[in-house]
Image (tube, rainbow, N blue to C red; front, side, top):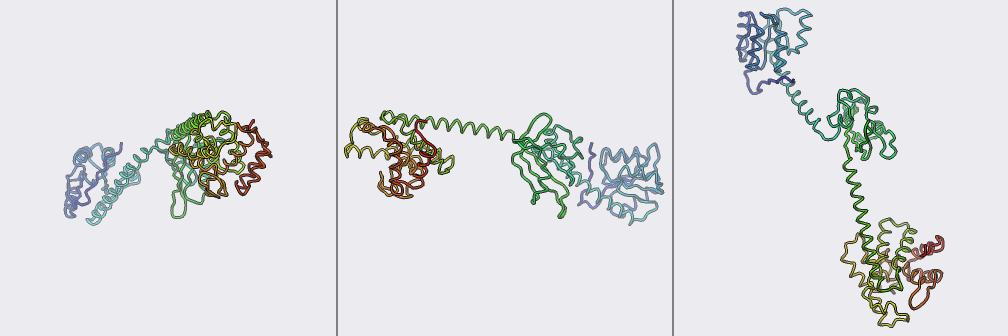
Length: 467
């Protein structure tokens, strides 16, 4: 039990004092001195029992306690009983003090001694020092209570160590996380009791050594694992040094359990994976819908997408960029849905009017796709896949880098697939003629590095649409 801390009001000039003295004349003299010094005397207790009764009832600001008292209890025993209930500063008054008596008195942690006889100045100085010390100790004790409550209320595990890595304190969360009591952990070596491991290899990590080798006075580890007797706990670690001038005298280590965060991240990844799968299925359905109008070129969009992705890989594009090209490739001819089937499957050369109608499919595709919230500019790629870098393409005659890189890649893949595959008006021409066509247009119709990458895919990688 923490004794009640009785603090005098700093603004009250008359501190309340209880005199415990069995000699009436001495007690009267002390009372007179206190009154002259401006203190308020609550009363005089001649015995230990009476002193306890008055102290617990009146809660004085200070007690002047004679060590030798009438009755069964002396002043030291009386002070000990009072201090179990209330923290009231005690100044011992004695005519003599042998070593044994002083040793007993020290146990009760008195705030001062006065040897009889004494002068008023000595009495006043001893009282003021006792009251000041008591106020300071009460404030410190109060701050410690606040700190302890706050420390144990923190949801993260907090551990402090000295400069040698010995544990000085742990909060309740740390005790529960480690599965050990605070008493057991005190003064233990941190690295021996707190087994931090790499989350992948599960090899031990000495985080205090990492902190020491770090030039900063802090260390942040976002992903580590705490290995306990029963389980592995994913945690983030933050270490800060406790400094005295320029010397680090200890550390504060905060371990945050990120198990729930890990579960949430895994759930989010699974959700995104499922969403992308659904997204890809929707795109494939759109492509199939458009190809139903033109059975002779069934699979054309898929094959263009496949070759375009291989070209993008050869150009060392990112995974996201390659996925964008795949989606745009699968949908690049979706605008042909608006063209009559008899024109798409006509076995002879198209008339100028029919060709003009066919050339509208990039714009129709753009109109179909622009309202869909793709994470990439798929609609613009579809609109530009028949443009040429010399400006001779359609529908708007864009040139050079005015078209998207993805559109320029699909343009090359589209030509190669179209020439190497069967069409209603001609048989398949094969890869060789398709390769010669894009080489002929290298630097004029088609971007040189894209043509080179495509040739490398066809010849060096032995690419085939039948794979």
